[in-house]
Image (cartoon, rainbow, N blue to C red; front, side):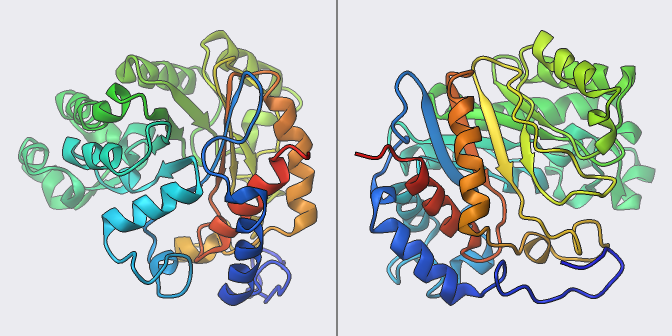
Length: 343
């Protein structure tokens, strides 16, 4: 794939183009993966989906959606006819509103599940003040409003609390309808092991109240020979799922693909692709960073791991975050087919 400092190289195996991916996805959809709902797993809910359903590279004509699916409603209804869950990533960039979640409930089957990514500020990322609701912007000191981009630590305590409350109220319709899987707390690269980080996770869990959550780390220091056991034990002690990651290796933000279950209620697997040449490169678009189509061998490697998770937790969510065009949807359809019981 090339080093982090070299120019991106074309890998036709893992970046074969939309047309090749579409053919693969259609082939998978004609087989066992055509079945909707959870993958059959006795005493367990095994759900497969993607990180989002509205990316422009995915909604482009002829990529994934039929010609008739041109509105947000028809796209979500079509998506939910192919998969049993989805991860909402738009909530990372802007706080949702209750009506949005209510519409998701109305447009999906009764057993469809949403994992919802926490708003950036909730996990220590900087936020653009323009993305805050008007009432929260108005509550900021003038000096902070003028910055345009602020870190959570700079915000008044009451504004931080209001952000959590706004997020909570907005996704309550999902929880009420029993369609909320978990709130994804994806922490930044500079979030490193220590008492302050552990306290931040516990504070986040307290803010979320009755909503389940899962934690994803983006710094390799959480999983060294000296820290792995402590990391997993801390999450286990507090019944917080540790997101199991498949992604580029050998970088500061790399974490190993440890199939560890730290909560008996839920295991979450997120597959980001393996673009090590772009993963930490500044200025790269989200679509390009995750532009990676897993091959059959790479998917098959995960099948036994995922099946093992179903023996340790009552639910498993497998989320493809390689969200360039139809790469994620194709791999999700293929994974569904691979996980289906063979008759």
